Every structure is written in structure tokens, then in C-alpha cells.
View (cartoon, rainbow, N blue to C red):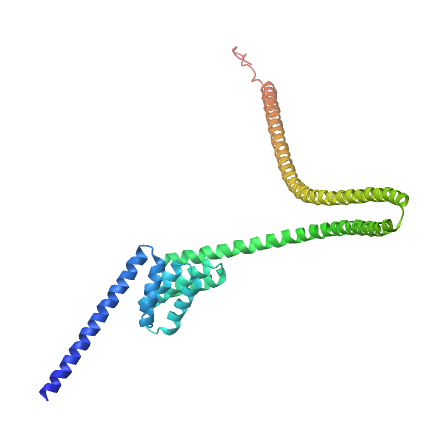
Length: 325
């Protein structure tokens, strides 16, 4: 019995030693992966962490670090997959850890140009951790970015409509030119067929007829050269027309901008003239005020002078004694 207990104790000790050795080795590998991650060796870090994760698939820290290393390796889809697995399969995540995962998901979707999904993840991270200023900043930044993108899309749609109108006009011109080119090609084919027929006749005709035919062939060749020249001219006209249309489109845009600038200048000039008229009216009113003030002052002085003249003088008292009666 004692031997059995001793044997069981030995087995238990071996198990503990093996578990301790495995735990130490696991920690060493994990610390080594973290050191390589800190040194910027993200690819090697991902390889090491993948081996560790395969052995401990439910370890939250390992999965979190593995997702971070895939993010640094620009494999955003794999990082998103790992983060989502953590959220769906881990029941013991606290709000701070969830907030960090949603924040990293927002970064990954942002780098994939999926701004709406990134915004949803940032908002969820901010709800879980309202004191995270970086997440709040990202939410505000991405909202402004989405508004800018929407405004840019409206401007692009307007430009595309204008470009479509110009393109339809150019296509019509190109169609006309292509029809003319086709006619020239048909003429060239007819000339070629005529040349073939003439070559057949040459084999059956006498030398004198051949000389006459040679002359005719030379004339046909000249005609062919003329057709080729006409084709080249048509092509040149086509190219010139394209350039003219481009210049017209550019001139139209410049004229519209010039009209806008002229309207702004005219409004500024009108405002300046109105301000000048107001200043002139104010000066005229001030001048009139001064004149009225001077006239009033003059009238008051004249009135004072008139009043001073109208004062009745007191009669003088006679110093002689009054005679007795």
C-alpha cells in the first residue's frame, strides 16, 4: 500500500514538474514574441503567436496580441476575424478590454476605407469607455471625414454629368468622322479590287494594252494616294476637333469662373459706390448743418442787436425845486 502511495506521489510530482516546465516555456515564448513585436519584427511575431494560439485557442491575451501582430502586418481582414472571435467566444471580457477591441476594429475598418463600419465600432468603444479621449477624437474626425466625402461625391457627380454631356457631343462627332473613315476604307477596298481585276486582265492582254493599263494603274495609285491623304486629313480633323472640344470645355469653365469673379467685383464696386454716396451725403448733411448753425447764430446776433435797440430809456429827473403854489 505504501509503495502504491509512493508511486502515485512520484507520478503527481512528474505531472507538476511537466506542467511547470510547460508553463515556463510558454511564458518564455510569449515574452520572446512580445520582444520581437516591440522591435518591429511583426511577421516573425505573427508566426510565433500563431503556434502559441493553436495550442491555447481560448487564451484572450494571446489572441489579442496575435490580432495586433496581423494588424501590423497589414492583414486587416485576419485581424478583424480574430477580434470578432474574441468578442463572440470570450465571456469574461471586461468593458475596458472590449473597448480596446472595438477601438482596434474601428482602426482596421478605417484603413480599409470602410468609414461607416469604423464609426460604429468607435462609437461602441466610446460607450464602453466614455473617458477614452482618443476614441472620442476618432469619432469626431471620422464624422467630419464622412461629411467631406459626401460633399466630394456630390461635386464629382456634378462633374460627371457635365463630362457625360461633353462626351456625348464628342461621340457624335467621332461617329461622323468614323463614318467618313469607313467610306474612305470602302473606297480603298474598291480600288484594291479594281487593282486585282486589272492584274488579271494584264495577264491576258498584249504589251500595248499592258502599257495602257499601267497608265491606268498609275492613275488609280494616284487616286489611292489622294484617298489616303483624305483619310489622313479626316483623322487630323478628328484629332483637332477633340482638341477644340477640350479647349471649349476649358474655356467654358474659365468663362464661368470669370463671370463669377466679375459679378463679385461688380458687387464690390457697387458696394463701394454706395458707401461713397453715403459718405458724400453725410458730408453734405454736415455742411448743411454747419451752414444752418451759422445762419441761426447770425439771426440770434441780429435779434440781440434789435432787442438792444428797442430798450426804452428812463426819463431824466430834474434837480430844480418844485415851485410853491
